Length: 302
Image (cartoon, rainbow, N blue to C red; front, side, top):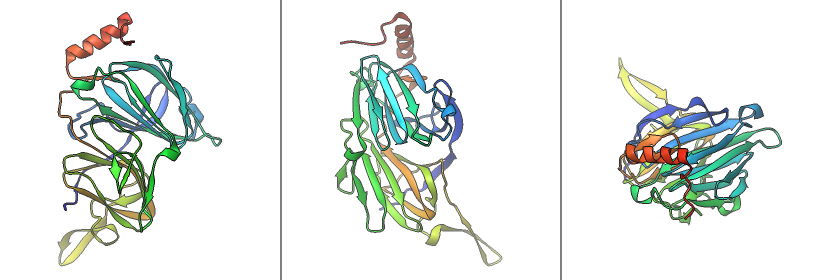
């Protein structure tokens, strides 16, 4: 067994998307190799309705899958194929855009005006980029939740973990998508297959992924004049942890516990040609997609 070392810790950055939605971006629209098969992760969390109600009006997608996970509030959605619905707290939508879809997503806050959710983009391999669009709408009660002996709780959205399988099925990259809570002061080790790329996104509390094998998350850095110099490297809210290779991830929770998404998937290792919400393999394919948007043939009805 080998614990995955931390390759990088990144603070999510404020950005604006859609018609003026203020959110935080953990990664996206950059180099994709280290996150392959994933392309982007956005944290849309706000207590001010004016910062999210404009939403994400009609826009296209092709060549990817979008995974929307709602923690508070609702997201109403509809698309060019006539599908429509609403995602509430704890719900997930796994949308395979495939050969192309136009849709809109409009956030609505809860009774206190709060809105919180995540959107993850996963790439599709070239063989499936022009597949038919597909939705998997998962309601909160359908997502299995497991509690370990130390109080660690894991919601299994996709993939298999601790003997439970998430309800999302048939996804090309065979990803695992977990919502993990580790109680205050507890340490836990979570399996991640060696061949997968993996990252954690912290959204509540804090914890130590770098030195989780040390007591209370204390990392001994060096000795100066015979004295140990130690630091506490705690990763906090809205931070992304990118892991190096290994077959398990260890986390030491801080004094308020820690909650994070743990996401992993098998790299596709194909060229990425990216134009906003359209991700293909070549520039020629991108030009064709843009031309189809302009001439009205982007949506394939059969």
